[in-house]
Length: 230
Ligand SMILES: *Cc1c(COP(=O)(O)O)cnc(C)c1O
Image 1 (cartoon, rainbow, N blue to C red):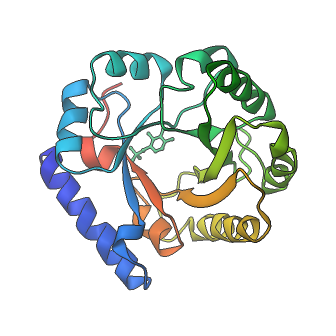
Image 2 (cartoon, helix red, strand yellow):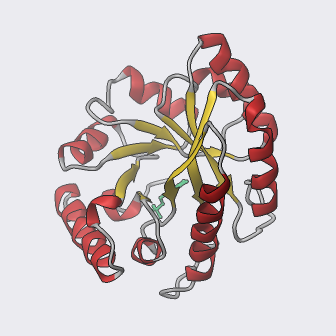
């Protein structure tokens, strides 16, 4: 299947999942997870109507930016970001989805202040509480939001999660629902530079479940581009 056919099929499944949950299909955005795919594949995905692109590795982001690969669509950073690489990402991407520590938040604040910009971010939640994954616990998210006044050059746009790998349909619903409830609770109490507009969850294997549970942005790689060649 071509990228065009894959995206058309994904859009159909997205719309069906949204409608089945009584949601407006337009309320869910498709982010192409472009890691290991070249600039030409990225351009093709954009031509076929993905809403934004998500890059995992700083090196790939820098190379594809130099190639103008994302022209016409926002680009997000979605991988683990080391504090010593924030200079290459802050101000270069529309959204950093994967803010997973207070240390990283501080480094982003410092760089955004230096550039005199406001950097949009999502807080990444380790919703499955997996040891091998980074991200805040739900409790830590509340603590960070208490501190958010100390980060005037950062705007929190919502939450992101990568639940455990699961091959059973509906297997991650519990985690998706926890994320949705957390976002709702935060919305009720949020401060000035905090919105919960984006709830980024759902990947190739489980995006329909995530949409049913309230996701507003799915990040899809394999189902668009095929299996990655490592
Ligand atoms: C690779 C990746 C995805 C997409 O995964 P697929 O299973 O290929 O759809 C989504 N989110 C993040 C953070 C990723 O690294």
